[in-house]
Structure formats: structure tokens, C-alpha cells
Image (cartoon, rainbow, N blue to C red; front, side):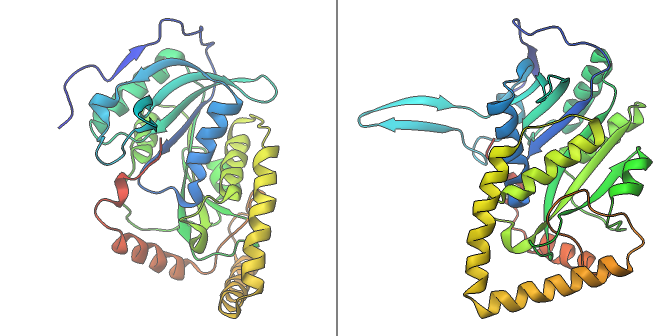
Length: 307
């Protein structure tokens, strides 16, 4: 059980946060196909240098044995202990536009208390919208735009960018709970599920992070300089294409996925992808694939996460 205590503390050196900013949520946890959210958090922290306003307590919210901090062993001594981080920060995009960023690990404990806290902080900061992203593996080709399923209260985004609209039950993440509670508070919300090629789901697929950043841009108007990730993606895709070219089985699989994708999109009345890389076969097949994926997960799989 976690220790009892406050969920968070206010950062004394935090800058003032102007009212009316969009809230962006990026939390690792149950699924992070293609390491989309992990790479987005890395981009936010390394490239945008956000200023923490609220620091959440890992001792209260995190199961250390499931997601262990890292420490460096240097010859004959230990140094550089790095605990997991979950922070609410003030950040600025590539154009200097400010926004509020909630980024880090998905809490293992106290979900309702955490959600209540986030709703209270959002109301106190008078944020204008809430947008969150996560990713799941799906049977789609990497040679097509990555599609999204969009939920929330912003119907214009759902209509324009939700290429797959299933009716199914899935294990919840804290992101789902935040969307529900923030929407109930009256805040305009949008959740983007990135549909990442299943055969790349366990890798660090840069296009998935690009798709997540693109989704946030569409929902908020924020602009991100992702040239480094784009270069990583060019190198990554070249390696994948080389492997496929020299493997008959992979070539057949890819062609089959491409045919199913093209057939689905040709007959689909749903929205088109934003500008990503990968999309959908048929709704029934995708629902079945999602059910198989969830059924095959080990009980401790939902506790994996890097940040």
C-alpha cells in the first residue's frame, strides 16, 4: 500500500500561470504502443524546458516495484538516483505560446483522489480545454497514415479525425478517468487514441510520437518543433523497410495490411487521418484484434512505464 500523505506539493519557485491556457495530458502506463507517450514526454521535457508548478508524490501514487527508478553504478559507488516524475507545469511551444502540461507516470494508486485534484487544479488555473493522448497496437501498416479514435466533448474533433468509432469495453487508464471527470466539470475535452502498427508496438516508433504531437496541435493550435523526431523516423522507417524487403513473410504481411487499409478507407464514411502514418482495416476485425490483445496481456503488463 502507498504511504499516506499529500498527493502533491506546490513548487515554491513556480512562475505565475495565466488563465485560459489549454491543458495537455501525457501519462505513461497501461499501453504505450510505439513508445508514443514516452517519446512525447521526452520531447516536452528536453526541448520545451517546462517549469513545474505542482509536483506529485511518487511515494503516495507510484508502485516502485512495478516501475523502478534508475540509479547509476559508477565503478565502486552509487550516484544519480532518478525517481519517477509526475508534474503539472507551465510550458511554451515552438512559437512561445504558453500551455499547461501534466506529464509523467500514470498513478498506480488513489485514482479518484488524483482525478479530483486535477479537476480542482484545472478549475483554479482556469484552463480552456483538456487534451490527452495514448496509443494502442492495431493491425495496420506503417506505410499509411496513423489513424486516431477521438473521444470527449469536442464533437468537431471527433467528426473530423476519428477514423474508427468502436462500441466496446476496455480496461480504463487514469487518462480515461480524467477525461470523464474534466468533462463532467464542464471543461471541453478531447482524447486521442493513436492506432499504431501492432508489429511495431513494442519498439520506439518515432512516427507514433509525431502523430501524438500532431493530434495535440489539431486540438489546441500549439506548434511543436519535431524535426529531430522526424529525422529519427526517417532512419527508423528505412531500417524497417529494409527488413521487410529482405523477408518474404514480412512483405506478404505488409501487402495484406495495405490492401485491407486501402479497402477500409475507400469504403469508410468516417473521418480521414490527420497527417500520421498508419490506419484501419475493418471495424469488426479491429474490435476482435483489440479483444485478443487485451486477453493476452499479462496481469502486470499495465504497470510498465518508463517515466
